[in-house]
Image (cartoon, rainbow, N blue to C red; front, top):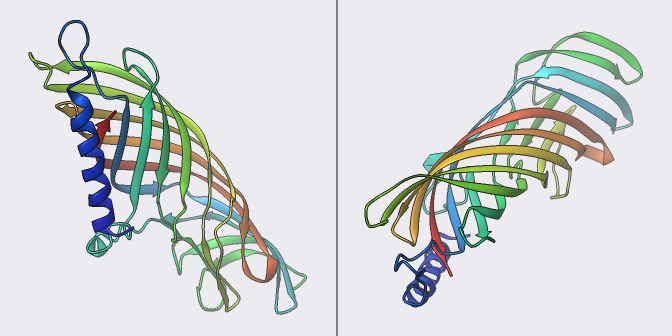
Length: 268
């Protein structure tokens, strides 16, 4: 999505909010929060070590092995922020409060995180390659052995239940500070780029597994329409069905931790 398109969307939402604001006030004369909200921002990620199981055949060479405790890192790439705001690791949320007090919400939560197994690390490899047993430390050489990454997005999708706790509000309720606690279940739709034994494939998007997430944030409301929201998040991610080369498959699971900063708009 281009920056211009995003700005146009936010301007449209702001216009709707302005038109609806004059009609929304409770009995005390204090206008409540809008019911719907969206937010956009960026994330920094950290991953636990992961044991990755590869199984398949490349150039008539069968393999079935595990790389144990592989290290991985993310790729924030903030230098590429402009003109493409979606190139770095971004996050997007859209949600709505369904109770009168705006304390409970449902939220669609999308994180365009990136996961890259670190090249040239030494890891223990166990299993078989070309029908020969392997049980030794090996260097993860991306040209001759293996390279593995989800960089067109590890693509975390979550449906969250949200509970809002009010911490502070200004005298005229223009500024409010809320604690937002979010928990959810979801799935991943990665586009995995993998090289095995010199053969590379930048794969297609597909549903590859499931995940659980828990997020905690502080939302500072600036009036009724705008807010900023720094947050932290922990996830358990299980990629059950990752596509590799020539019909091969990979499976791995890991813990992910994210630190995020977003800006948002409330409307309707």
